[in-house]
Image (cartoon, rainbow, N blue to C red; front, side, top):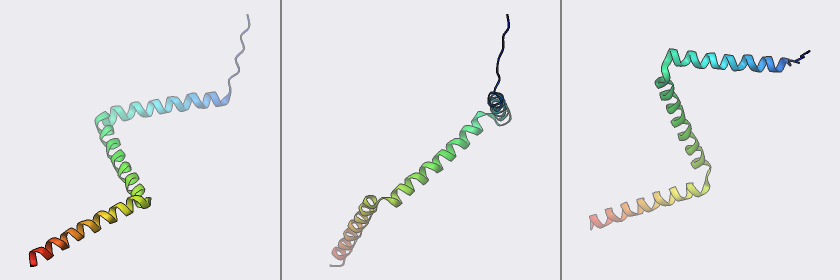
Length: 87
């Protein structure tokens, strides 16, 4: 019985990359522990979400108009209250 296997260099590269990723993950876990990594991921996630929300709000004309209306209504109420108090 004769068995021939063709090994593509891409397969070798893929296997090596997988092993490297696994070794890096194991080293990170043993060196820093999962709590540190979770904390850093959480912080980065929070910062990213804030930036996305900020970008969305800054680029949305509808949201901008609602904010302007809310500010205008609040200012009118404050002016009315001040005028009532002065009388």
